[in-house]
Image 1 (cartoon, rainbow over the protein chains, first blue to last red):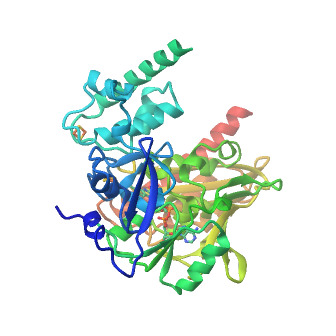
Image 2: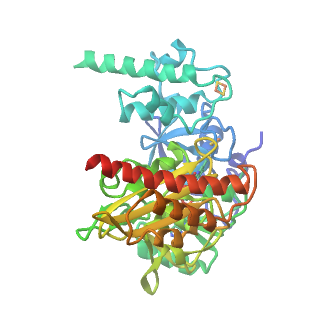
Image 3: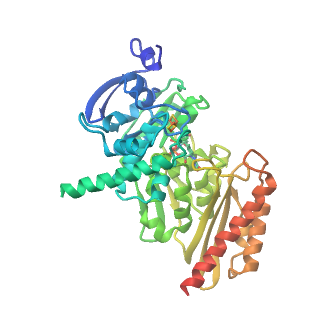
Length: 178
Length: 291
Ligand SMILES: Cc1cc2nc3c(=O)[nH]c(=O)nc-3n(C[C@H](O)[C@H](O)[C@H](O)COP(=O)(O)OP(=O)(O)OC[C@H]3O[C@@H](n4cnc5c(N)ncnc54)[C@H](O)[C@@H]3O)c2cc1C
Ligand code: FES
Ligand code: FES
């Protein structure tokens, strides 16, 4: 398979220096050598082989490539990999622990928040960012927060229900932790 | 889609950034939120030799109201920060109305107001808002700083008056002398779409009378339209059904819409009229309720 990442890895163009970047990816320090024009989405998918991050439109519209950048939802097809140097990136692979799904993932499972699943990683990360900022959102607030993520299958109803389910679960978890 | 090759610098001071742009001799470009530039790089509509990423220049990250009441928006102030700002809710009704309508929530986490003005997209919402408020852009280059009225800053579609080695460091909204009121309405086909029509209205009143009025239009011309005459007709008068109607009529006349996939020219002109009436009527309703 040829990709820009592979293309530039063995023999970088001599006139453009390759940059060494250190990214905290899902809590783990990862180092990569990248050409400045490499997009973050491509580094994640082809460089780090984490293919949970999808590229749908590749034109900054659909949100399938959404990841958390220092905790905020961003479109990884619209950021350069070099810009992530020294920052924290969370992808969908970073949500679950070894033994347990993240409440947002559980919510999507329980409330049937996905059909083909293409939009799902982006939806779940946008939802995670929302619930960190606003642990008890209204339905309108959920719709608003997810309005940058497109889904061609579900009609959104169950996605919204999934996020509200996750909000309840997170609330009961934090209540029992107190 | 891959951008063409470029070299990349991410300096941590403004002086370094300006030096890099100067050394780039017109082949370097500033990277702010990247929400317009990165898509352009991918389509290869832009193919600079160097990118000067300003995201590490901490001194550009602010949103501040000065004691004199002027509002200062640094080059790294993102749309999302404006959307959540209590200063805007309290003192800048036109900006507070516009902030949640820019792009979508994820784009708003990165994109900047100053970057929007620099990008000078005729469909961009902030240019109309800042025009209606009589705002200015402060630019810094090797020879120091200058302040440019936003109407002069945007020189055409996707064009601004910055020299190749200048950086727009902040946007300044002057203090209101009277009581500030206003709004922004945007007709969009779906969240994240650019405006079919956008209307920004910013007025100041003293008692019953309007002391200053700015009206500007998005998406209905080759560039942002300053409907200055529509604003002027309100000055010295009270907001009544008649004065509102004449401002709306003048704003609709100032529009230069084109028929396209978003709607016919007549329809867009009609929406301009409706939006001016709606924003100004909401202001009178609110003051009547408060009285
Ligand atoms: C899906 C999508 C939907 C959108 N919808 C809307 C919308 O509805 N309304 C709207 O107004 N905008 C919309 N935008 C554009 C968005 O608001 C951008 O954030 C904005 O236009 C550019 O700001 P930026 O900080 O991202 O600039 P960048 O993309 O980094 O830069 C844009 C241009 O300005 C120059 N520049 C940027 N900052 C400076 C500076 N400080 N000094 C000198 N030059 C500078 C750059 O060199 C470049 O040429 C949308 C974008 C996307 C991806
Ligand atoms: S792939 Fe990034 S927004 Fe669609
Ligand atoms: S589940 Fe198929 S795109 Fe959302």
